Length: 479
Image 1 (tube, one colour):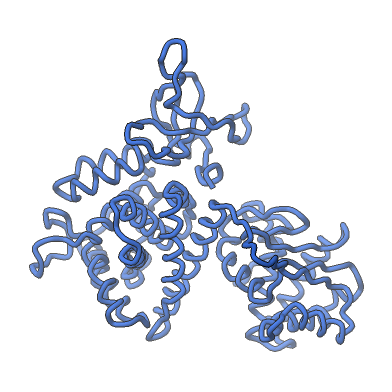
Image 2 (cartoon, rainbow, N blue to C red; image 1 turned 135 degrees about the vertical axis):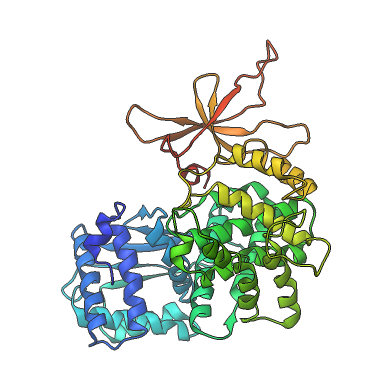
């Protein structure tokens, strides 16, 4: 059932500005499927006019896209579940039309169903032309729609737009999650499924890793607890790419590693949801269903429309990611005498993200330092000991997103480890929490800094803290 604007606003405090983006996107999607006089179109346009009426009460309604961020009425929209699910689609929609925004001015026609639908039809069809902004302006003029101002993209010769690395990484993360969800949807309903866009996005992830590994790793803190399967697969890809890059895997194999990791759990599409979300202990029959998912992943990867040689590169790691270093685990096999490098990397990434994530059957997720302790404990049995050592070296003893209690009484959120062979301590963002208030990010300090007089550290780590218990969502500070 479609969500109404009132329901959207009551869900997680979604504001009118955010409601506009969501309902605008739904209206565009509806017009691509249904005629103007259909019930679905009438419901959507009614919802869109309700939101627009509220926003137009204060003057012009201004919607803009800048550096992969959305702005409505000059207000930057924050990421949350509803925005995330449409982010990549609406960004691509605007990009194809070479638009950076729209201005809707108050007038009787602005809130009339007929003119509003006509404007949106012109907007949708403008992508078919060589110069969409000019064509759209021409069609709006012919239709006497003078209450819309289009804001075309400005292209300066010889100059690429400057995009913040964090925003770029965030954009790739959300777009990849959306593409993965679309692949899963198509696999449920169709035979062959294209994966070209997934490959392109993974290539961009690899580029981010080569430029700034810490930023790529920080994206793994962008969790949506209601969408575990897709977020987990994406985080495993992020961690696998980062580890592969850390140990020196070259670019093309690194892309294949990322795709393997992204598709490692595809087979869970064939596991009943009631088993995946069960909070109590699984029965033997239910465990057997879970143990089938690596082989199911292989079958589903075979459905992807990719060259045969590419598919061959993608099959082994998803099949192996629960086969342990000592050949315990599942599925049982006698076809080879060693788990592949990609399989061993994906297994470490899969375990680390799983135990640090919220799950239905677990009362709490593990803090990153405790997850690392379990990895080290399983080295030589469940995990490749050399890769575990590399993983711990990569993320540091306190991985990005770990909340620390310092001996000064301050709380610090680990931001990163500047690359230095001798470094053991990270840089942290001091977290300020007014009494009963929302945590705020403060100064970034380096725990390696020492008192110049005494030569002692200015701050020491007392212990790690549960970020959730203290109301701290790491992604809001890291990204």
